[in-house]
Every structure is written in C-alpha cells, then in structure tokens.
Image 1 (cartoon, rainbow, N blue to C red):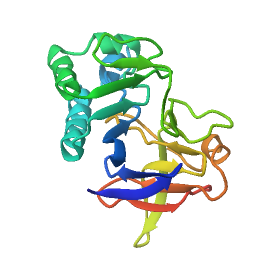
Image 2: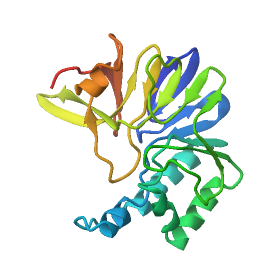
Image 3: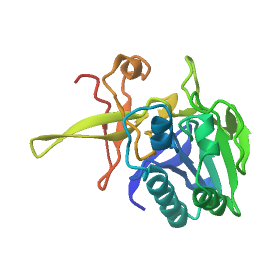
Image 4: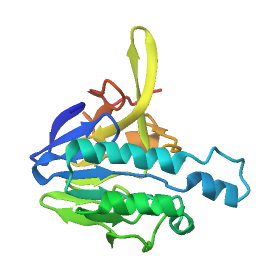
Length: 222
C-alpha cells in the first residue's frame, strides 16, 4: 500500500498517499475535511462558480481507498460538508454513492465547524470519539493527548532536484496527529503558519502526500 508507516500512541498507523489515515489493526480508515458541496455552496452564496465535479471526484477517491484497504470502519473528522445545507442538497446519485460506501461498515461523522449538527445520512454523528488510546476530533485542543484531528488543511514544502514542491501533509508530534484535507476543492495552510508552527511541538514531522509520500521534519519557515 502506497503510504508511510509510523507509530503514534503505540499504535501502528499508515499515512496513505491520498491523505487518508489507515489503522490496520482495527481496519479503520479516517479522512478529514471532505467539504462535500463546496461548489454548490459557493454558487448558492453568489461566489464565482466552480466546476461542479468536486463531490464526484472526492467520493470516487474515497471509494478507491475503501476498496484497497477493505476498511470495516470509517471516521470522517468533521467538515465533511461545506455547510449543513450542502448535506441536504446533494444529488440523489451522490447520496446513493455515500450509502453504498457505508454499506457493511461502521461509519462515524465527527462534527466540524462547517457542519456542526446532525446530517440526514446513515452513520453515527458525534462531537468527538475515543477509540483505544486515540481521540478523534475536528480541531486540535490545547493540551490534547493522543489526538487525531483535521481542520487546518496542512500542507508542507520540500525541495526535490532543486525545485520546491508543496503538497498536502500530515503533521505529527508526540501528542497530536493532524490530517490533510481530503476534499478536492480544499485549500491548505502552510506548516510554517503560526497557527500550526506554534501548535506542533519541537521535533514534529510532516508526511507529504502524493504519488511518492515521504516524511520530513515539519517546515517552520517559508
């Protein structure tokens, strides 16, 4: 499987090239910040239109990850929808695809700041969820321990053959793991931004996604 294996809270985890987190012992796949319905929400609020293909692409990539891992449990770490209305205005084929992905699996929706309430789709809706030593929530908390979160859409840069390459990235230290955004139309916040560089401990690592995922010391300067 294309990804980077690492240990966190004494658990064997894998940061997949797609930006999903895989916990093989529990057959659990975790994704964050799908932001389904972003193009529809922007059009609804009068913003410049985006091509309305983000839901299709995001769900298809998730389907590939589920097929490859044979995951039996899925945790969506909040901001799965760009707002609560976006979960209602999904096209029927998109709702059917989500139902198909959920079939035979335990599915947990963690609430985010964009979707802070129940959604009318299958699965369980929680503010946060503890499984073994890990705590799954949308936004990292001060003093958090063994915490898996999203929200910040982290990205990091590395020089490859003299060129600077920027990719979505997992950020990892002794206490917290922050996932990159999984959604097709999501932007990113550089790891050097104070919101992240002040949050992550000295010695934090970044795991860059993409066709050749790699782990590097977390960049703290632009």
